Amino acid sequence: MGTVLLVIHLLVCIFLVACILMQRSTGGALDGLGGGSGASSFLSVRGTGNLLTRTTAILATLLFVTSISLALYYRGQARPAESLLDKAAAEQTVPANNPANDIPQAPVAEK
Image 1 (spheres, rainbow, N blue to C red):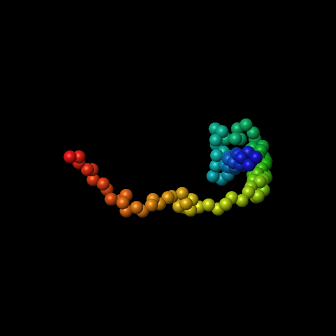
Image 2: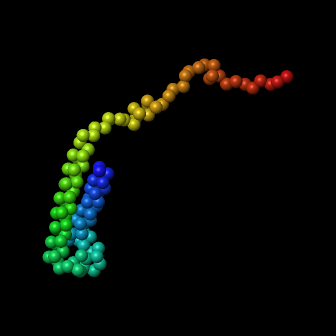
Image 3: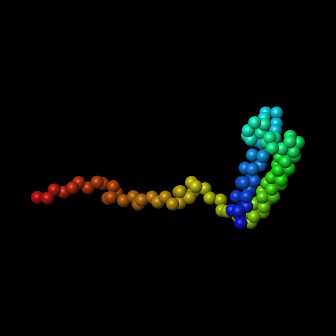
């Protein structure tokens, strides 16, 4: 369930950013993405503005709903705070310090 909510949340975020960038602004944004006169080539200027405004409002509402849903879903799941450094230190083993093993042995020539 959490994975599905997270995927939906990410898709809503991507579509919301795209919808905001497609809106007409003083800088032009991505309005010319559709070629020629942009998104207004298939709708009137007023219709395009209304469509993008409604779509932005719907996507923003979905973003809030999925954000709150994710927060409530993961609220009861407390993860223990683990540090990678603590975990690596616990897994690392120190070899026993045996002086007899530290001295290299020379090969003995047979007579």
